[in-house]
Image (cartoon, rainbow, N blue to C red; front, side):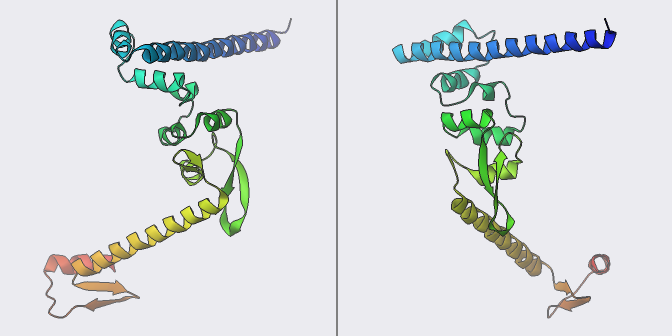
Length: 201
């Protein structure tokens, strides 16, 4: 038998075994979360009993996630780092469970692009900015809502730039523009300020 074929089959069997173990791990997290939620529904005092029983195995912060998975507020893949970008993951966590399920099943969502066109994108592969444009709290923005969001963001950028320019104009005794310097009345500059002005030009 060819050695290359043997190595290839060996790695394929390891990948298959890993995939099966990972799926079993996800199923285990879901089952454990459902058991925890059932105990909470019996009595909220059970939360501290679970935490005490597993304090050497699980951090206190994990219990909130177990409850979220058990109540189908959060997809179990989000616990296991299903999204490498934490900012994207935080936006996806706020969406409904059915939408999270659609994302992890590689469903496509419309994204408004320049010129009013749209394209269907996979949020698992989208940039943080694209996810921010599509996701609005617990829901997916429509194309018209995305347009309004983009316009609002552009307006905010313009306002920030104007405030920055205004602040700079107020703090400096001069304004540089179009290859010339305009001084305010009564301006006196130190040697260091003149040096800075020449460097800025």
